Image (tube, rainbow, N blue to C red; front, side, top):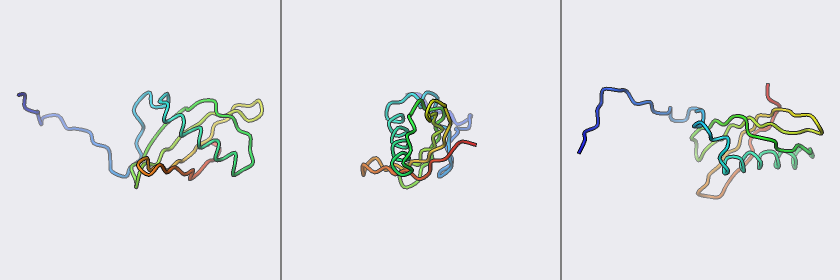
Length: 105
């Protein structure tokens, strides 16, 4: 049985810190569904008609569940625009809530 070497420092995510999601996460079906949820919730709350186009960037933060930070490309009429969304999820409780949805800076 091989022994683990302790020579190289291991990078551990900062607990509670916002981290970039692993590469390719913007193509993950569950992540895309959460981003679509964010757009749909925004549309309901703001009486808007934004259409989800694609997920541009994903970051997350471990809290009481997971806070997802998305940069989402939407279609507003014929124009493509970027928005930032924050979705709080507790998967074990089947809970998700849109915390924030605003135009990207």
